[in-house]
Image (cartoon, rainbow, N blue to C red; front, side):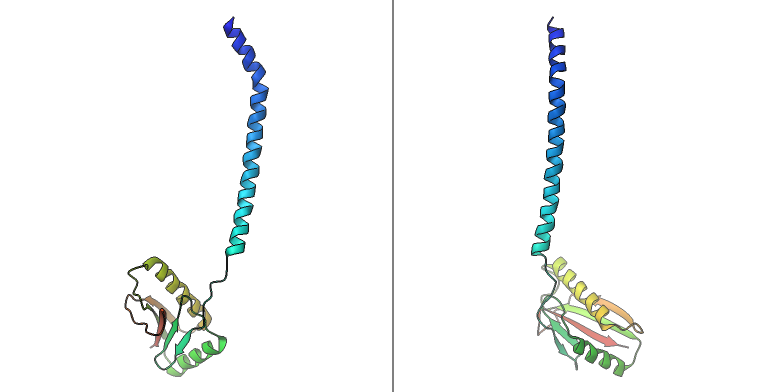
Amino acid sequence: MSESSSDENDEELAPMVDGLSGALCIFILITTVFMISGIDTVVTGTGRAFTSEASKIDINNQVIYFNDVISLSSEQYKIIREKLHSQGGKNLTLDAYTSYGTDGDSVRLKKELIYSLLKFKDDINEHDLKITLKISDEKKCTNGVFCIAWSID
Protein backbone atom coordinates (compact mmCIF):
# COMPACT_ATOMS: atom_id res chain seq x y z
CA MET A 1 0.00 0.00 0.00
CA SER A 2 2.77 2.37 0.78
CA GLU A 3 4.27 1.85 -2.66
CA SER A 4 1.11 2.90 -4.45
CA SER A 5 0.75 5.83 -2.09
CA SER A 6 4.21 7.15 -3.00
CA ASP A 7 3.45 6.68 -6.70
CA GLU A 8 0.29 8.76 -6.28
CA ASN A 9 2.29 11.47 -4.48
CA ASP A 10 4.86 11.52 -7.29
CA GLU A 11 2.09 11.90 -9.86
CA GLU A 12 0.52 14.71 -7.87
CA LEU A 13 3.83 16.57 -7.42
CA ALA A 14 5.12 16.16 -10.98
CA PRO A 15 3.23 19.16 -12.47
CA MET A 16 4.39 21.36 -9.59
CA VAL A 17 8.03 20.31 -10.05
CA ASP A 18 7.78 20.96 -13.80
CA GLY A 19 6.32 24.41 -13.13
CA LEU A 20 9.04 25.29 -10.62
CA SER A 21 11.77 24.06 -12.99
CA GLY A 22 10.36 26.19 -15.78
CA ALA A 23 10.12 29.23 -13.51
CA LEU A 24 13.72 28.72 -12.38
CA CYS A 25 14.92 28.51 -16.00
CA ILE A 26 13.09 31.74 -16.87
CA PHE A 27 14.55 33.44 -13.77
CA ILE A 28 18.10 32.39 -14.73
CA LEU A 29 17.57 33.58 -18.31
CA ILE A 30 16.28 36.99 -17.20
CA THR A 31 19.10 37.37 -14.65
CA THR A 32 21.71 36.55 -17.32
CA VAL A 33 20.25 39.12 -19.71
CA PHE A 34 20.35 41.83 -17.02
CA MET A 35 23.92 40.90 -16.06
CA ILE A 36 25.13 41.13 -19.65
CA SER A 37 23.38 44.45 -20.24
CA GLY A 38 24.79 45.75 -16.93
CA ILE A 39 28.33 44.83 -17.94
CA ASP A 40 27.86 46.67 -21.23
CA THR A 41 26.73 49.78 -19.33
CA VAL A 42 29.71 49.62 -16.94
CA VAL A 43 32.23 49.21 -19.77
CA THR A 44 30.65 52.04 -21.76
CA GLY A 45 30.52 54.31 -18.71
CA THR A 46 34.07 53.75 -17.49
CA GLY A 47 35.86 53.15 -20.78
CA ARG A 48 37.88 56.00 -22.25
CA ALA A 49 40.25 56.69 -25.08
CA PHE A 50 43.88 55.77 -24.43
CA THR A 51 45.37 59.27 -24.53
CA SER A 52 48.07 61.14 -22.70
CA GLU A 53 49.71 64.52 -22.44
CA ALA A 54 51.58 65.90 -25.43
CA SER A 55 54.83 64.20 -26.37
CA LYS A 56 58.14 66.03 -26.77
CA ILE A 57 60.38 65.66 -29.81
CA ASP A 58 64.16 66.07 -29.88
CA ILE A 59 64.49 66.23 -33.67
CA ASN A 60 68.30 66.56 -33.63
CA ASN A 61 68.78 63.38 -31.59
CA GLN A 62 65.82 61.69 -33.33
CA VAL A 63 64.00 60.85 -30.09
CA ILE A 64 60.39 61.27 -28.94
CA TYR A 65 59.73 61.45 -25.19
CA PHE A 66 56.26 60.69 -23.80
CA ASN A 67 54.33 59.52 -20.74
CA ASP A 68 52.05 56.49 -21.05
CA VAL A 69 51.07 56.82 -24.73
CA ILE A 70 52.61 58.67 -27.66
CA SER A 71 50.58 61.73 -28.64
CA LEU A 72 51.88 63.81 -31.55
CA SER A 73 50.17 66.42 -33.69
CA SER A 74 50.01 66.21 -37.48
CA GLU A 75 52.58 69.04 -37.67
CA GLN A 76 55.02 67.05 -35.54
CA TYR A 77 54.57 64.00 -37.77
CA LYS A 78 55.20 66.23 -40.79
CA ILE A 79 58.49 67.44 -39.24
CA ILE A 80 59.55 63.84 -38.57
CA ARG A 81 58.68 62.76 -42.14
CA GLU A 82 60.71 65.69 -43.54
CA LYS A 83 63.67 64.64 -41.37
CA LEU A 84 63.36 61.03 -42.61
CA HIS A 85 63.22 62.09 -46.26
CA SER A 86 66.20 64.43 -45.85
CA GLN A 87 68.33 61.52 -44.59
CA GLY A 88 67.46 59.22 -47.48
CA GLY A 89 67.72 55.51 -46.81
CA LYS A 90 65.17 52.74 -47.11
CA ASN A 91 65.32 51.08 -43.66
CA LEU A 92 63.73 52.78 -40.66
CA THR A 93 64.44 51.34 -37.21
CA LEU A 94 62.24 52.36 -34.27
CA ASP A 95 63.67 51.55 -30.82
CA ALA A 96 61.40 51.90 -27.77
CA TYR A 97 62.89 52.50 -24.33
CA THR A 98 61.63 53.24 -20.84
CA SER A 99 63.25 55.08 -17.94
CA TYR A 100 62.34 52.14 -15.67
CA GLY A 101 63.73 49.34 -17.79
CA THR A 102 61.29 46.52 -18.38
CA ASP A 103 62.07 44.37 -15.33
CA GLY A 104 59.52 45.44 -12.69
CA ASP A 105 56.12 45.75 -14.32
CA SER A 106 57.26 44.25 -17.59
CA VAL A 107 53.94 43.12 -19.05
CA ARG A 108 52.21 46.49 -18.63
CA LEU A 109 55.25 48.47 -19.78
CA LYS A 110 55.79 46.29 -22.82
CA LYS A 111 52.11 46.54 -23.80
CA GLU A 112 52.28 50.34 -23.61
CA LEU A 113 55.53 50.40 -25.59
CA ILE A 114 54.12 48.07 -28.25
CA TYR A 115 50.97 50.18 -28.52
CA SER A 116 53.01 53.37 -28.90
CA LEU A 117 55.36 51.78 -31.45
CA LEU A 118 52.48 50.55 -33.58
CA LYS A 119 50.65 53.88 -33.28
CA PHE A 120 53.78 55.79 -34.30
CA LYS A 121 54.41 53.38 -37.21
CA ASP A 122 50.84 53.83 -38.47
CA ASP A 123 50.78 57.60 -37.98
CA ILE A 124 54.18 58.19 -39.61
CA ASN A 125 52.61 56.76 -42.78
CA GLU A 126 55.83 55.79 -44.56
CA HIS A 127 54.94 52.90 -46.87
CA ASP A 128 58.09 53.14 -48.99
CA LEU A 129 60.38 52.36 -46.02
CA LYS A 130 61.09 48.98 -44.44
CA ILE A 131 60.28 49.57 -40.77
CA THR A 132 61.80 47.51 -37.95
CA LEU A 133 60.32 47.76 -34.45
CA LYS A 134 62.41 47.00 -31.34
CA ILE A 135 61.85 47.16 -27.59
CA SER A 136 65.01 47.58 -25.56
CA ASP A 137 65.64 46.74 -21.91
CA GLU A 138 68.03 49.69 -21.58
CA LYS A 139 67.11 52.69 -19.43
CA LYS A 140 67.75 55.32 -22.08
CA CYS A 141 64.92 57.84 -21.57
CA THR A 142 65.76 60.97 -19.59
CA ASN A 143 62.93 63.45 -20.28
CA GLY A 144 59.95 61.11 -19.95
CA VAL A 145 58.79 57.72 -18.85
CA PHE A 146 59.03 56.30 -22.38
CA CYS A 147 60.88 57.25 -25.54
CA ILE A 148 61.15 56.11 -29.13
CA ALA A 149 64.38 56.67 -31.02
CA TRP A 150 64.55 56.30 -34.77
CA SER A 151 67.38 55.75 -37.19
CA ILE A 152 67.38 55.38 -40.94
CA ASP A 153 69.84 53.47 -43.13
